[in-house]
Length: 97
Image (cartoon, rainbow, N blue to C red; front, side):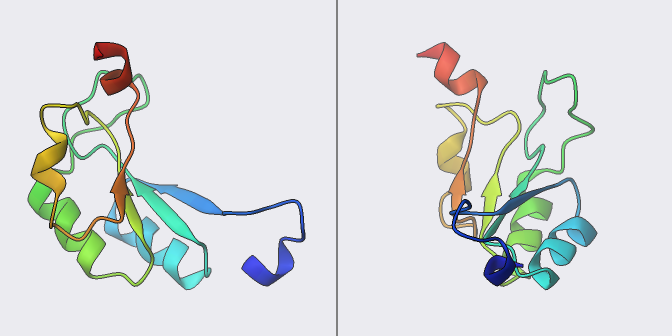
């Protein structure tokens, strides 16, 4: 996929809510995958939380960089450090500041 995207694209990511979706993004050769919701979230699209332990296992078991999203705040983001995530993403955390 990355070689076929052309000059207009810089980074191609996928959204995932479980291990199978992350594995599909990895197999497709995408640049990264956003896994959510790691924590309980008030987002209308959020399903049941994956949890830090399970999300960490998913991130560590795939070669693709996995970015944690869903319920991430300034208070709980540090719980994700050292757990195999390439980074974190948040919406509400920025509204709290």
